[in-house]
Length: 353
Image (cartoon, rainbow, N blue to C red; front, top):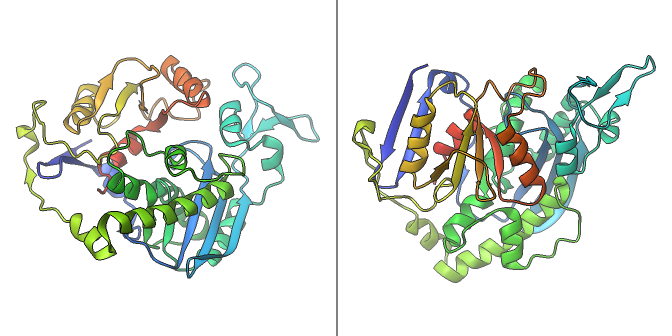
């Protein structure tokens, strides 16, 4: 599969495009660096990290008007049912009237999100939830932490189930955190909660509580922006950069002009399985050229485990490598590690800074 790679020397960023990625490119709204008074904070919970294979299991939103919360939206979403296989599956299964065993989420997702199979069994269908969600957000600017993740899932599901294109502009608080707090090594929502000492009385890893936390973070970031730059215009002016694209063949590992705001900068990346679009050594080269670190094994220092797409297919029984199983265990123990697919990896490489 042909791939085009371009390197931006001025910003230290890499752009990766392939026929497969281009054919499914989303026509999303614009990514903004702004602090409007009217917006809607969104968050979702899912069965995994790739919209091509995984499903939404919860959607929540908070509508803010004139910097005050006006209303909220929250709903579980019933994902596709999975037939239980005693030989391979290890989770709390359900049974229908005929005794057939089934489930919606495995033990890992249930522990991570605190959403059980019993809760999802009575949840509304995805189309009904999405119709109500679209009516709630209207044409509002959407705000979220690592909001590209949420937007991609919502975009694909709205297109598939409702024949609707999500074109709302959006603001990523993760992007703002990287701009306003370069001194911090990590910018996860939990890291920023600790940094700003934000009160989080509700349970973690549920969509509405994360919306509430993200909204508080957005308010703190606005204060920090004014403290550092005095005005929004000064802040935007500081972000302007000249860009120059070079031939990928001129890129070597001796590159030292890294963009410290890129999500892979100084992050430890590990690969497992066969990649569809790149040789593993080429994918590792892209990480190193962005200032990232590559490793052959998963440890407590690993930040991202990238799965070959053939390993990420849910039809493969117990299709988890030892690296993935170790990464899941570390994730549940609170380590700063994410398990992402090959497609999500390419989207990260193209992350707008």
